[in-house]
Each structure stands twice: as structure tokens, then as C-alpha cells.
Length: 331
Image 1: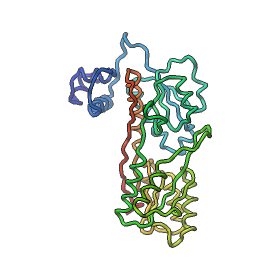
Image 2: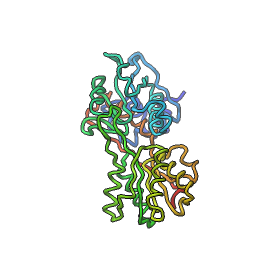
Image 3: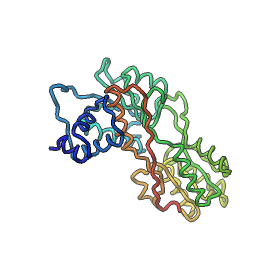
Image 4: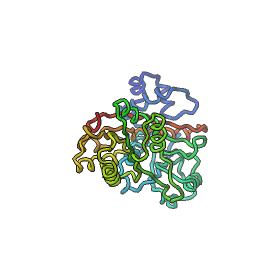
């Protein structure tokens, strides 16, 4: 069985530092890189904390998802985030309870939960419901107030610019966007999407914006297919030579529509998606995309929550970088 000494040797730090990091000592000042090395070493060595008389009570947290299990299976983005949460909780010996957004009444009151990880988009009234359960809340893929709450997010503004810059560098003059819009589950309002907003604003700055090249539906394979068919019908020979698809599901639908219309990808039209879900490498042609490190998002959320539980009061927002994955749907 691995020991703290083994972790210290692998991470290149002192035994005392390992002990204080793994026990979430709020007075310890170390860099995020050092913490990461220690956590990674602990995982690689399959380290399990021994229970002691001093701490017989297991930390109990809840993950509350705005997607049902059926919806997760249709869009693996949130499923992968939840896997990251579950994996980190198992490593740290935390007890995890799982709920969907409409199951909050199942949580007993008073309860012994020490924190919540809320995965997805939650309206103001839903956030208030969460606050009534516990003050320790971490939002993943959303932040209702970055001055008050911790969050783990993707910088969709930078991701969108990265894709547009790639198209411009490859001399595409006509660039289109096929995206989606979402609303809160309680239908209180629509949710602002930074991909769409950034696409409009940034392409205008670059002098290549054409509003008729923008199509908006839902973040689904079906709408990707439907909207690309409409774009083909609308523009025919004037069809953009490059499309940014708001996520990989949309991109996969776009590829099917282009294939049925005998429009060559990438010779005639380039497609770039976002997320890098597991099937992206198996479609035809394999999809170029920006990888979102979803499991890392989940793991990071657990680490932030433990910091909150052990005393941190100042809100922290962690932005996870994307990674360009070049395949064959673009030059």
C-alpha cells in the first residue's frame, strides 16, 4: 500500500507538504502546480487515506446535474464532467450523492451535506434553492456570480477566436456558424451563449461577417443536419468554405448533410467542432475540433469544493483551456 512518503518522493516535495495538501490544510501556501503533482502522484500510486479516530466522519457532498441520465447519454459532455467528479471523490474518499435538478426536494432538511457541485446551467431561483441547502456551492460550466460563487468554466470566447483565427490563417473569406441556444430548465429565460456572441463580434472586427451565414437551433446532431441542409439550399454555390459548429454533435450532423449533398469535406467545406467527444475521431471524415478537458473540469470542481469546506472564503473562478485537435474535416 502506498504511503505519504512514496507520494512525496514521486512528487519531489516534503512528506509534511504532502500530508498538509491531502488533508486540505487551509493555512498551507503552495502553488497549484505543486498541488497537482501531489494529487497526480497519489492517483498513480492508488493512495487511499487511512481513517483515524480524529476524522471518522466521511465528507458528504452532492452533485446536482441539470441533465437527466438520458440527456447525458445523448450529449456526453456533461456525462464526462460527472465522471471526473466521481473519480476525484473516489480518490479522496468522499461520499457522493447524485441528484438531477428537479430532485432537490429529495434532499432531507436539515441535511449533513457539506457542499454541492452544480453541473450545468441554473436559474436565479434554482441557485437560491441550492443556497438553502448549503453555502458551499461550486458551479461547473456556468457561473451566476463570479464575485460570490466558485466556478469551473471553459473560455468559449477564446475558443471561438481560436477557431476563427485558424480559418482566417487558411484564407477562408466566407465563414459560417451553426450553433445552438439553451434555456434554463424552469424556462425562466434563455441563456447567453458566448460562442454565438463572439462569432458575430469577432468576425465583424475582421471584416468577414455575413449574417446570412449564421444558423441557430439546438445543440444536437439533428439540428446540425437540418441547419446545414438549409445552408446548402440557401447559398448553393455561395456556400461558405468553412463552418464553426457550436459543438461536436452539431458538427456530426453537418458532416452527414454535406456528404448527402456530395459536397466534399474538406476540399469544398471545412468543418471544426468543439468538445472532442469520443466519437469525433470515428466519423467521416474524422472531425477537427477543440478539445474541452471535461473530466478535468469535474476533478477541479471537487478540489475547489474541498478548499471551500476547509475554510476558503474568497470566490475562485477556474478557466480550463481548450486544445486544438487537427483531423481531416479541415485543412
